[in-house]
Amino acid sequence: MTLVLAAVVGYLCGAISTATLAARRRGIDLRAVGSGNPGATNVGRALGRRAGVVVALLDVGKAALPAALFGAVDHRAGLLAGVAAVLGHVSSPLLRGRGGRGVATAAGAVLGSHPLWAPVVLAVWIVVVVLSRWVALASVCAAVSVTLVALVAGEDLLWAAALMLVVLARHQPNLARRLEARRPPPLRQEPDAT
Image (cartoon, rainbow, N blue to C red; front, top):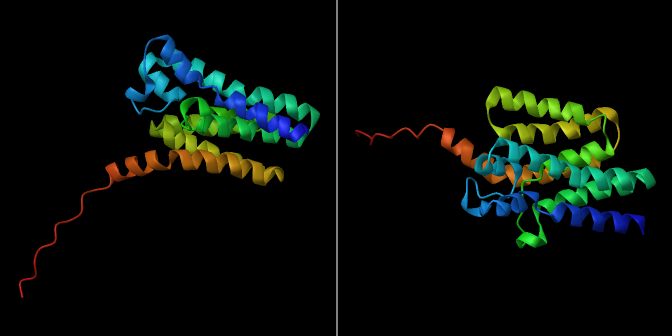
């Protein structure tokens, strides 16, 4: 029963779109601004850096809180609450199945279930964003680092892989678009002279 409750509460917490609420409060439709994504990065573009940071922190909290609370009762329930919050964030029924990319919420799941891992994941994100100036790449690298840390620690590898896969899946279209834009144009082929 605890696992079911953890999944439901985690999902419902994750489904609350803090980005959409913040934008609506200012009369802005996030779907029509920037990437159109209801997430903290797009809020930062549309409403300013401070609003983006506040939304990111709230997204971290909406997974960290249920993960930590249920984790205090049963470690597996905490893990489940965190993953469910990420799934609620990326497929919110309040947004007709749409949602953000799940990065801050996944960070909250890590913070709530494995707080000692969180500084490593955050450091990876910061280093990559500083070096590349590309938030999506930093987000993907941070998600991969969760799985690597779990592998080194020898615990909760499936949970870490699930978080990573959700973040990778949500970033795939963005990464493909960016990589395609950076690809040099194909060389023109000259017709054979024979």
